[in-house]
Image (cartoon, rainbow, N blue to C red; front, side):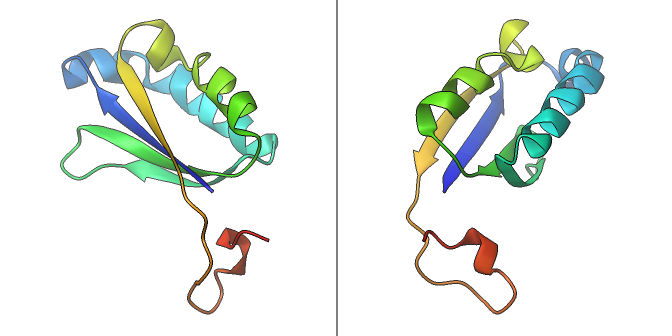
Length: 95
């Protein structure tokens, strides 16, 4: 699994101005079958996406996020091998 850690570099007002295109980009990630879960950080300093797939392909896809294109945020990507999960979360395990 890949943890995509998005951190804002600008004020929230600037992030909000690009939120609709960013959310469309997130939706496409789900449609590709890459994204398993996503949401805002608390406090709101960015977001996190749980992803699965080829790292190089997902890194390339992250570069197309409107937040990245417009200098709103940066991604840090962490690769995690998930071996143990709670009941009902088997989709998160690496096979």
